[in-house]
Image (cartoon, rainbow, N blue to C red; front, top):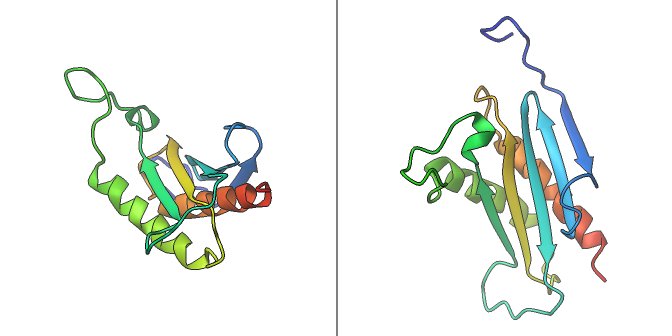
Length: 142
């Protein structure tokens, strides 16, 4: 249970097709009261890799998702935080080994925290959402 008396749900819920319809693939994952959205977009032209990764991952944690207002004078989001960088690298390390060597299109995965309760890390939800979004996007590539 949690400190407030309500049990923390460990149920994982996947949804696709409701948000980010312009992306090649999009999925939301909810674990407990935390929810993340991952969108995947692929280039339509072949890329020359020259030793670089075919997938770029970005994770952003908007302040409003955790119920905060940015503390900057302009009230705008700033640079990446340490948590955002850690989760970005964690998701990239989890996804890259399963990307086949035959991939010829660049892909970008954007992960956004939609709701966070602050009680649990969202890294597992981010990995699952990114994987689902990439799977959906690769099935729609011509």
